[in-house]
Image 1: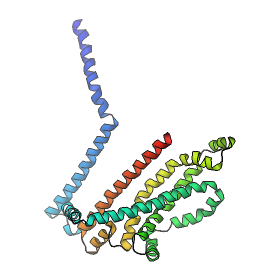
Image 2: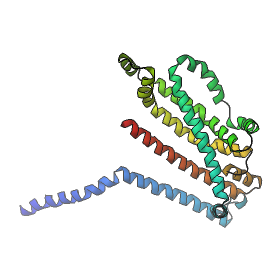
Image 3: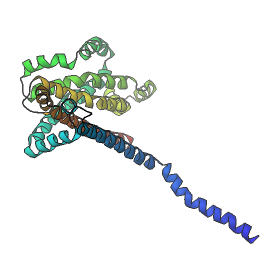
Length: 280
């Protein structure tokens, strides 16, 4: 009897000790860490295989360069200060154009809620503008606004405005009509309904438009620098391609990806702030 009574307790205590470990491996933190480790392993494997292929002669270094050559370009340009100038130029063009185009377009889209007639009137023109490729409008923008930063800001804003305008307008129009009628029954004015109900209801749509426009904004800045520029990451990539410097081109692409990750993180931070404010 004594042995039988002890055995279940031992098994029970062992199962209790195992539960925290099992809970950890089933938790979101464990899943996140596992994904990070796997992602790092995939990148390291690809870069290592690429480098080994170039050093062994199986991969053409002139056509594909190598991770070590790309790293040399990045470190040398950082040491000389050229990289800081290029990143600063492209980042300023992207941020200013994003504020003007994406945020301005979101505000315009929300304001269209006030008049269904004006929104229907403007719909075909908005669709026509959205159908114009950024690459087609870039040369005209350079001619109109010059070769300085203003022309790139205009290109970035143009590439963002339509997406933000349409997504924010759709979000505003999806506001619950029963809630609108409820506020009207309390004699709420249109401005009050707009600020207290329409804007918070459309916030998820506005934020989705901002997330989409991060990539469009950076692409617009790069395209503007392709057309005419003295510095910037796009200018760096253009010079590398014109001189058949694949290592410079790939170094520029790496910078674009890093900048994209930083801008995405910034928009995600703003999204968390806005959503936390909305919950309050």
